[in-house]
Image (cartoon, rainbow, N blue to C red):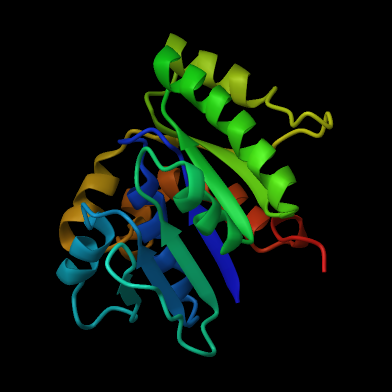
Length: 219
């Protein structure tokens, strides 16, 4: 099983958007997917509640209410985390993850918050001796803006204390396709390809990383 955690201590950065689209992408591949929602706002569970019955099945877990029990033979566990998570709850989430994707918005406040959070997260990994893999994604970006350029430049230079670069996977644009998908319990991968081609192209590097050995702790 590959467990993928969407994580950022700052709210509103698009964790649920990434979680639901990743879950649906792998469900469309015929994989057994579980979406665990640790956020009491229950945005991922609401999305599942709106999902049409004829779409590939994704099992949902209201993880903020109960200890999660992931079904046997699950291929992918997608974890949607709450905002402002820290301390023991953060450590619990990190323990369950193979890969962590950190979505970051294009604003100076979000960039500074992300810098502090990535440092804190890496310190936690060292204390736990957890070799979970980190990567960043620029989210809700209006292309060809100064804010987009600043975020792009920052994410290209993020490094761990060891000097190893944190992979910067993609720049996801601010697209109405994500809003439409969220409203209907779908992903952008379930709309007509012609209507979502620019968005799909931005996802290619994300899935290339997730499907590679680079996204998982060494055995």
